[in-house]
Image (cartoon, rainbow, N blue to C red; front, side, top):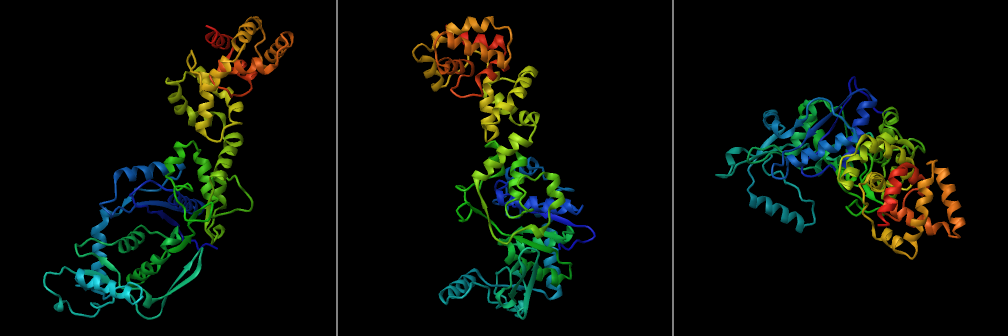
Length: 473
């Protein structure tokens, strides 16, 4: 079982060097769910110590992605760079305690050290040559770094909530740099200090950070601080089992929003990437909070499958999301397509049409595209296939002959319109398609749409007849 402190505090700590990618979004989700499940806090820390690569644009993308997914954080955002003086203070404290030392290796020495290790087939590690030397031996004009004095005997054990017990021999870990020669703190030190000061009790992150955990635990021990519980989750692979890349779907959360996926779909899909609750596929936010635990996280990498994401999005659109919810999401997309703001009547029309439209759409973009003809201004812009249908022999003649029948039709309900049109084609000895296909083109500007009699009813008699007349001029 997950050890639960008096107050659970988790965190998400992205580096603002790009968008909120799928792996980061899942990490944020798991931390968010763990905190919400136990009634704790979910904190956000922006690890912006890499000043050359960190951008405000990336920070904004991360915040927008989390907001879109519904992952609200507690308290103020912590910006790591703003805490650098605190990190320096702890490095100096470790120095005073004898758990760190000044290293005066020159760049040339470090290069030679790496090349020798590489030539001898050994792991590339600092050899500790300044570990027990006096600063009095320092070469002139060589600014020192501060290195952590890592234990050389025994082992470091991580009792991981996902991976189980994982050990490393201490002699495999070199003395890492805490403060660089320019006085700036390193990531490894900053993370430990921030996690302690923020009161983090549980750290859920990708298993590519597992090797960092050994080093970070040693710093916690040296400082006498409480050590957080670790849960290192397997990384996400592509559907073919290879490392996730853009061709598999390794895009930013914003890209999935722009491609027309619902945030609840993506949140549900990310939850099921590496975590399971029986055979449940569709899991609401409330159920996820109730059911989530690290015990449900698997040890094997999960596979990102766009086809499964499409399937799940279709389920949400057809069976879960309300029509008003779908309208809210696709409204800006429809308005962009038709080039004008929708009126209250337009919105009501779309609401009535959605049931027929969403049966054919896999995402919000497709839904918006298919709905746009209902509220487009006349005359409609015809796609190429619609023009071909109208230009076929007798197509416009058949529409012109049908027009008086529709103008005389008093009952403008789907069933009554269908009966009238079928009676017409029977009397004229025509096949239904000879009339229905050009009728669809005239009413929608396309060769595909929901049932044509449903379209006629929803458009209304006046608009339907006007659109037909536009194609007969």
